[in-house]
Length: 572
View 1 (cartoon, rainbow, N blue to C red):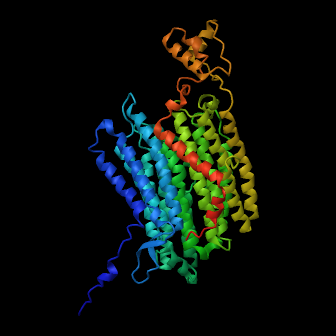
View 2 (cartoon, one colour):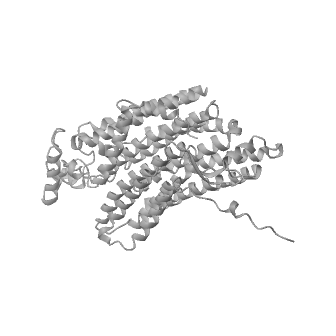
View 3 (cartoon, rainbow, N blue to C red):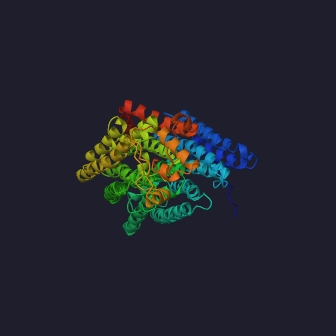
């Protein structure tokens, strides 16, 4: 018997290197940074962070040749329109969000690792491993929006997620960090298992892993396999709901954000959600349109529950509790996830599903810029007040006027109030999508949640401009002084400059009058007053991150019509 030789032309594919450049450059940079860490002296480890920032900048520039041109690669020889990797407008928008968000996280991390190097007890964060994990996660997140088959989609999802587990728990000897990483890991592994089971059911009923072929096959499923197909669709959506922190799969979010280093929490709040929502959009709008009657109502209910529970939990945060600022941002991100789910749910009912998806991407771009900016300010405040309570932001305007104004702008954008016009317009686009789809009840739920969110965003904003006040709890030395009948020095009036309080605190540390002076300081020892020289005290990388996000938010607020125009763009 003669066996025909294989057709080599069907096995060898040409690779479009320009199309795959953004994730490829990021992945190569991750490997180079890990190797370079072996040879870079300890005193020059900061160069690794700047090299990572440069690599992400180069990856962002590699998006320019792809603008306006739909490119694809890793396609079938027999069916050139069926591809595993597609660089269309949707891909470029999400890749810009991912790479830009990762760049801001890198800038914040440079200062974090620099402070860690100066720690008296030695480093708790290894430089090379940190940058390698961050860039690897960003590479997976950049690959995911281009994936057009379930295999590539799930692999990219895990490449983005697995390094994030390690980043959360990377601090040596930190019990809170380890606990946060464990919760994050267990929830994500469960999500992956459910997603894989769902994908296997879908493959069993359709015989393909390509999203477009799955859509064609699901439109004409044999009646004997209808239940299996529906189960596969439902399980796949549940897996992605874990990744997006949708209720009831949100329990890991607050503890993970608090336990992780702040730059990592900022990264997860934006890129982690972008990964989940991108996968959700791809499987619903491209692969599962025939089952819109299954995933449409389910996502609508998830959106309502997510925004309501997220905003309600944010509303209940106590200002004086440790890490209450980070927890508020965490619960706020859960609430924002509900808004992001709304247009995807509306796509099941809309005549033009791609336009509804455009609303989600437009809202995600706005949210990414301002939420990263809020985390950047939180990282700055945490350098001097590590407990990062909401009360630590009281009087911030008196000590750091520009920082307070920028944070106020970010919070108003998230609330959707002027001058944060971009937040208002982004919410209008979401309302437009749900009204066009005829989901009036969901529009009412969203309106109520917007009002709820206004309260806690405005409460935090108001704290920034209030007069500083002394801590409600006296120190042990003060209590001892009062017990012996000693007269404590009166607290200074609110208008006394912060420099006076700082000088008094310094004098208290070097004189025997510690008890008397302790009542003058604004915070207990763990939360020292903010620097009295805000310009000199702000590290260059954090200043760059805050400036970058603020300029983007201000530019978009000055031209909010860009959001509406983007939402009308054909993304696929």
